[in-house]
Image: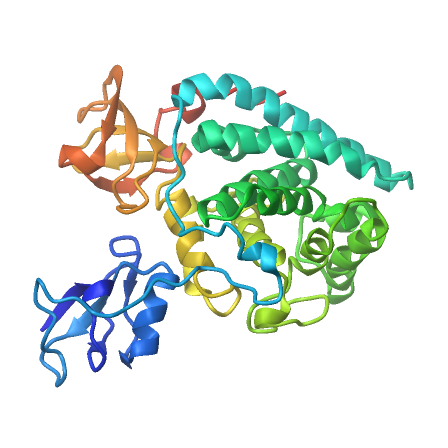
Length: 411
């Protein structure tokens, strides 16, 4: 018999098995075919799992009943023994707080995003013209992002993922900065680390300013030679920034290594595991997520829940252990701005997440079961008894998430 057992009730000798359940229904269940030992159990919580699927008919499964707990200890999601500041003031990964209502913070977040976009545009365009980069301009916009995320992270996130801008190159840098700061804050890192992640994110694609536009914006599959030119952008960006005052090694390495992969399959140097800097480990996750969920001239967006499933499948291959799981938990299976249909037939827009129950977000309900518009009503699915039936594509619904959340889509 297969049972779902919480991580702190697991015992060495239990057999974890594949329950055959869709990832969207049980996104944080450990389901590899493996005989669990003490070290594996200790790592489960570190990697963001909430439970494991256990075959209780096999030997060694006794002792998992209610009231009996294991000896698993909580380990940090990201560690780096060689960098003391990445340990200092490091807390357990925790849900981001919402100090003020979403609609109130949106007023400030719009201005913050616009300022960040202007900064990104200025330094990328300046780099294309061969001008000296004014790196000091990053500091105030990073502080603005940190402030907005502290007040209500959903505001900047929703603008980053719903707002339409003219050029992906600029908006991608800003979006990665927003997501990177959110993620490092969620993981419990200090304000100093959040600043480094945000700064590296703003400049992570600077090297693309030296890539020919006909390659950068090609509406087709690139040739091997063209792809090699694209791959060189990480090194080019690093070379442009390495002598910048006040840029730490962690910031510079974040720019240089954000396309490195945990299994050594990335570029430019094929680094693996602990060789990859902590800033780059964080940026690698948020960079992929924003790229795949963003609209491009040559590609449609992929729904967020599908992208999260793709990232989750690549955990420990592309991404440092624990980061994929924690990132999915932070943004939620149905991120803010998703249009969803509930099991009672009504529809609405996701306005907040419940990290410990990622399939039960907070929504603003705007259509009843018959598809008729109703006064907007916020519903926390954690308490309502309702659940998401499926996420709707924009072509499937008359609901405008921009309007429901009060987001300006252009400008």
